Length: 188
Image (cartoon, rainbow, N blue to C red):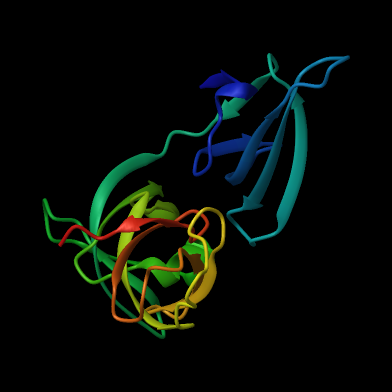
């Protein structure tokens, strides 16, 4: 099915020169002068090679038909990350390179949108936000303003992020899975 390049998003699967690619990043660029373009960073599904392409925003690109279905994360081992389809209880093993940096945010029982093509997982979309606990952070200094100063903190999944000065170790916070940025304190 042909779609215009500007409608493509991260996780979509496209067919270029009879090869399937999953989109890693998609950015629409509108220069002051000239034609707007869509910059696509893609990973070839067959061998994992990364490719960068530019299309005019109105150019047609062949989008492959993939099945998007919600799966529940179970565990990971040497085979990869294991997910279960909650409808028929089928299990799918997903290689680590498909998840990339997002694998650190996986939590047992998390609902993840898996895209499959001919029975093989080609892309995974995690929830936008995840709640994690801070394991280590610097102590708050008296007189430090809360306006724009942030301090480094280590999360329970081993990722470093920047948090406001009032947040201490042991606090549960909500972070964005896309870049690990602090959103708010957890409400639980």
